Image (cartoon, rainbow, N blue to C red):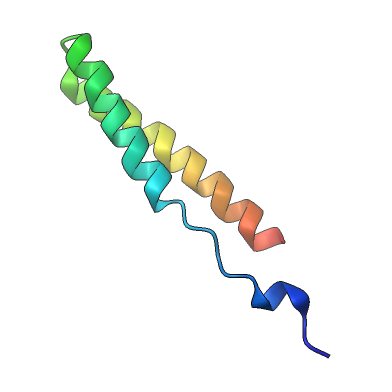
Length: 59
């Protein structure tokens, strides 16, 4: 029998990463620290993307 989980495609976290980077830069510009906003966006996006990846690997 085929495994029903195998028919489901993997979930991508790249869009979340890109969105958090953009949000971080915009917030950084507002606070006059765009580099810090970029780094913060990368960090937050990487954590969220890793959590999505882990959840997808388990199911």
